[in-house]
Image (tube, rainbow, N blue to C red):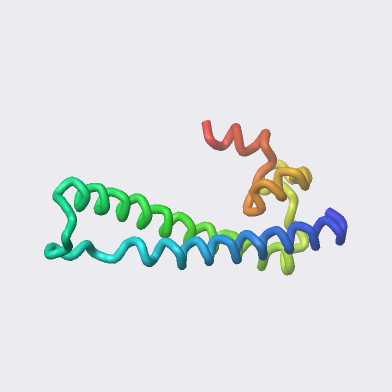
Length: 115
């Protein structure tokens, strides 16, 4: 991976972290408990609670992805072997890293490891 590709990947990761952080902040306001005295019907209350569960799950997934991306950014800056498959040692294609920066395996090895 050349310096230009590393810089492109670094910028993509930073933008993704920024977007996910905003998404978490936006969703946090939607998971406040529904007050029992709220003037909404029973079905609306159940629907709101279901949506809260979905949003809580999205928040947890986004927070985990932020941690993974921050770790990836650290590895990108400090690991001389970043971008090499941890299984076979071949270079991970830049297109794969741009699509999924936290990839540690090439497509071939990732497929075999998931079997």
